[in-house]
Length: 145
Image (cartoon, rainbow, N blue to C red; front, side):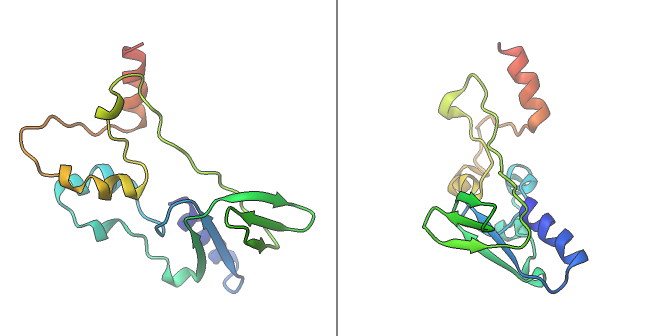
């Protein structure tokens, strides 16, 4: 989501410049809220993808930025590829907050792979499920301390 929003903002002020995105996930930008809400209500998986074609972005997916050389204006990724830049937007990403209980019984819907791997979980009857956002997780964490 952040990469798509950043590219859209850049395009508003610079329609011709090149934009490159290095991202650890192997998938192009998608909307995360539907991963834990819409898909559980049988919306199609294709409904989460953001439309990035019109932004003319080069995606370097499944990679992580490993080294930044501000003087040379280069970023080296985990495959050893060096990317040059004139201007750099560094967005470090995030990981889900883990609850101090539940272990493997709790599925944290953060990356696309978590949701696509759990597609068989959707629509089963008899199971108890809950989908909670960040504010709910904070309340639960305070309660269970």
